[in-house]
Length: 318
Image (tube, rainbow, N blue to C red; front, top):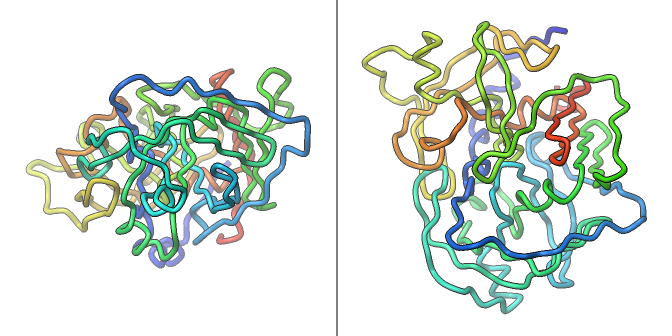
């Protein structure tokens, strides 16, 4: 199955592509032990309405310690994040001030303990969350980012995203059996996130799966050189992208062929990461797969089975 991209659509969104880059935002080498939280899935309707913001970012409504807020779903965040302004409103006291690795570099972080989060049928109790100043990201994105739902959600349940129907389903992994007709890819846990496999111009590569990035595809320099997409010496960066920890340089490119399962995209606008700091420089993968591609499918993330299921569909933006 082939898919071609209309350049004007993606050019119009180019300013937005990396406002969060949250997959590596907190591919978070979290200091100290992770929280011993518990997860409960109630026997109720698993579907949650979503807002498909800017046709790239999935927001839903949920509760933090009983207070209703917007939440951004981010498969690449190694830990759930609360904005500092929300933590202040809820009078959550941070444990200690440390620094984490973000996509643009290192940034100061506090750790809040014993947080409860409710999303649809899912309740997470005793959660240890990062507390970050996300003001710069909020300003560029044009909306508040009270909560970034990270690894804990994907590890607790099967997550099914249907952009066309504007729904998110949180399903019990113990009883889930995939019965769709889509393609199935690996979904392997690595360094707080998940990695899958794809092909660029016929070459195999591993990719971080990152619903928190509005990009289509980011290639890391080593693979880009191997694929003949980055010359030596490297050219000056095309532009700089904002993420947690600051800005990181990138080169804009067009990939002739990108294969994900049985789907091939031709003429895909993509980027090469040109920085030598930040989490993108230390990823175990060879690139980053963002929402610009993932949300062209009905996508099912099954962390327990280590499988990613993609069924062909197109978001309304296309």
